[in-house]
Length: 365
Image 1 (spheres, rainbow, N blue to C red):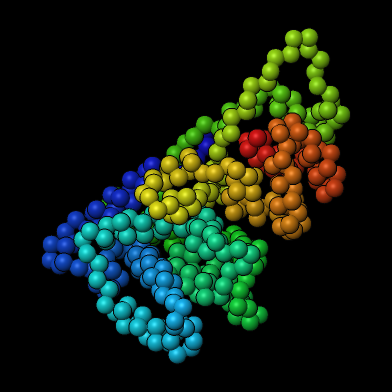
Image 2: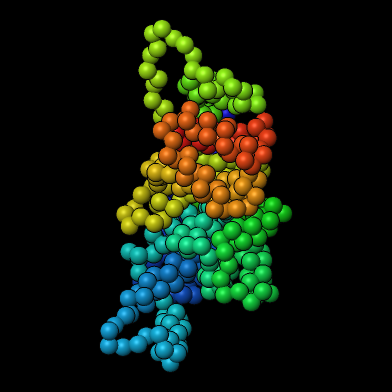
């Protein structure tokens, strides 16, 4: 049995937490002000994530200020808009109808940050970022992040030291991962205790035991066994059968990654957070796209494969995954790995990283 994130519980708990926080909040007021939001819950992280959502909504509204008749990009106009924003930020007013979903989302985001920081940053900073992340985005994340502020501080300091207006995604992931290796879980323990003071919960409640993936079909097992035996020639020699039956189709399965540190659970909420309709956290994972191998990898899988198998070259990783995507089945994909990738990159076919890579390919096919 393996431990994985209990997404159904996380979803339900975020909702329960929101209701508990707001159960009697509006009995003495009609609106929540900025000061109210800063101290709404015992968790500073949740409170800041509520304000972050308001800032993001403000940014979307400001992005609509485009006109063929006026220039909103000149310095004087941008300064005036900045002053206007500062004034408006001191006059936050959120009603009873709109506050509950903000609190629920903030709690879910904070839990994601606590249990799987890499995937939180993937959602928060990497979605739509392209090949690089701006200094302004890093500063904004630094402003609202408390549970992993040191990691963002390291990225921010690196950019300031080298006078960078943007940082490549690869470099960002490298700095972030180095910092996460040495992280201290004491902040996370305190964070869970803060939530529990409102709605009782334990860290272990967010994890549940799951059965390991089912064994692969016989044809694929034969292939994998030959790969594990230094990829002997038998892989390319189909068994001779007088009445060969058609191989059953391989069902594509989604398996959430598991880090070597059992306290770090790997999962993403990208689909739920990007969707315009309200979708449960569990549903967002069930419907996650498997159109390509690259899209099916979590951020830490991409980072690990890129650095340990492809010498830190993102282009080589992407090109290899693209070629494997075009293979019609698992047998063909594993032959590409055996005859092309392993010899070219001098991989050890018995190493854990190569076996993990092969396992990902097999599950996708």
